[in-house]
Image (cartoon, rainbow, N blue to C red; front, side, top):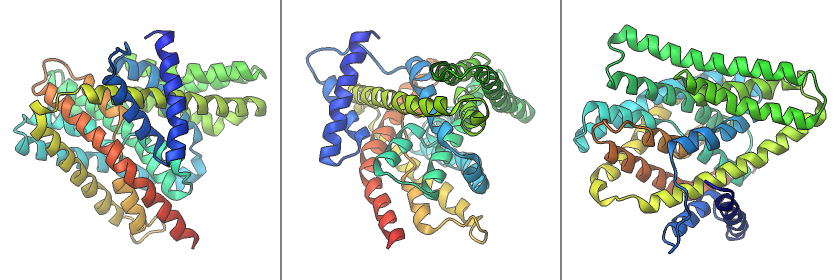
Length: 391
C-alpha cells in the first residue's frame, strides 16, 4: 500500500458517498459496486484485501469507535439479551451452519465447524454503517450494534480455539475450556490494561491533540497486544472502547472529548470506505464456479441458522421487561449482516486446512449476499419500523 493508492481510494469513496446519497442507496453497497468496477478496469489498483491489512489497520478503529459510542447505562438494561445472542446465539448459528455444510457440501466436520464459527457473528462494520445511513436510534440500534460487537469477540475467540484444536495443540473438554478461557479473559485483561494506562496518561494533560493521540494508541495497541498473546484483538479493543467511552470523561477534558468523537467518526469513515472498496475488488476476483454448490448452500444455511438463533432466544425474554417485539426480532434476524471480520478470519485459515479455498469462496458469497441483498432491503424495513413507532 502506498499514499497514492490511498488517495485514489479515498477520492472514489467521497464521490461514491455523494452519489449514494443522491440515489438513496446504502453507501456501503455503492462502495462494493465501485470496488467491483475497479477490479474490471484495465489498470491495477495495486492493493488487495488480506487478513493482515484488516487486522492491523482497518478493524481496530471501527471496533473502537463503535464501542466508544455505547453508553453503559443503556447497555446494562439489555445486557442479558445481548450476552445471550452473542454467546448462545453464536453457538446455535455456528452449529446449524456446520451441520448444513457438512452434509450439503460434503465438507469434513472440522472444515464445517471452522466455517460455521467464522460466519456466525454479525459484522459491526456492515451493521453500524447501515444503521447510521438509516439514522436509526433507540433500543433496536443498541441491540443490533451491541450484539454485533460482542458476538464478534465471541466468534473470533471461538475461531481461534477451533484452529488450535484443528492443529492438535489442545484436546479434551478441559483443554478446550482452558484455552477458551485464556483467549477470552486474556483479551479482556489486555483491553482493560491498555484503557487504564491511556486514561492515566490522559489525566496528566489538557491538550486535546495529545488526548486524541492516546485514544489512537489505545485502539490499535489493545488489538495488537491481544493478538501478540494469541488472544482476540476484537475483544480487547471492544473492552478498551467501552471503558474509555464510559469513564473517559473522568480523565479526558471536555474539549478533548469533542475532538476524540470527531476524530473517530472520520477514522471510521475512512476505514469503512477502504474495507467496502476492497471487498468489492476481492468479490470480483473470486472464482465461484469451482465452489458454486458450497456457496449457495452457505447462503441458505447462514440465513436459517440466524433465524434459529434469534427467534428461540427471544422467547427467553418474552415474559420479562426485556421482551423483544416481533418486529425487533425481524430486524435482528435480517439485520444480521456479515462482512469484514468473516473475510479476515477466512483469509487467515492455514493452508493445510481441508476445503480452505471453498471456505473462502463460500465466505465471500455470504458476505456479497449480506451486503447487497440484505443491505438493500433492511433499510426500508428499518424506516417502516420508525414510521410505525411514531404513528
